[in-house]
Image (cartoon, rainbow, N blue to C red; front, side, top):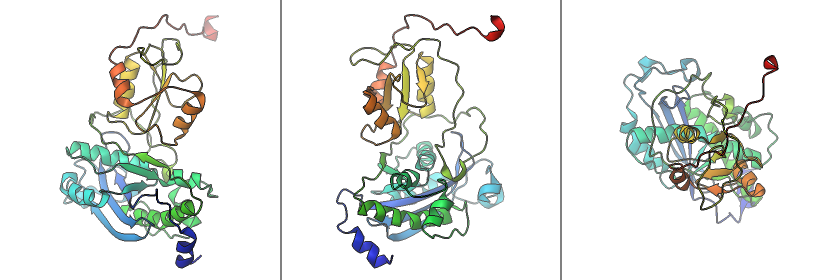
Length: 335
């Protein structure tokens, strides 16, 4: 299909679609909340996905560069690079008024949101779009959800994998035909809210194996081992009543308070933090209830109560005690 044909089949363009996009890729020192960005790239696209310009910078992470064998950036290469606050204005200019697009956008946006928070600057991002989610919505016949597979599907040639500028270029070239395919089908784009961090910490978390998930598969947040909740599930949350210890709580989307901090506080209050939504879920906490994420879709289908973060944190101040303590089943050795 030629470019002209593509434009013709995309007309009329959906009026509800965004007016511009910022395709982003960042390389980092790792995945933990105290990790830093070492390079960033942005391709600005117009409403139909045509490239307007691109931008790239190294960033001094003020610490060791992490997986040099992945991104190729040594301490020597980053020594004279600008600090994030020194490039934040240029980056903000390229993000402002556009939907942030990334492959596994939860990762790139979370790392950017944390850098902006450290710099005490508000990121001009209101919505983000993950190309993994988009490829799933389009039902593309991909063997997996790696960037290289998406690129191969659209005939885009990768030149320097894990180089932020080339990864952003590849994604921009693969995003355009994806966007046009969505437009032809009248599909609703899987847009999610981009919420800046207002409360966070750089304290190290439990050690994690590896760095960015291969090809952006799954979520960038590694599963955390937590002790079993000692209280039985009292059932669903009821409006105008307090939370009760043992309630099963799931989270979806961005939160103003660092997600891990929010989950820690929920556990400390005696709640059970769940990684998915089921019929047993007491409530779902999300700031973007209209997003078509798997958790919000399931919550609505099950009739699970949905609360915004601010309401949840208010209720978290006074959680009702459990009526009883769950007794774990006896181990085989004790029988």
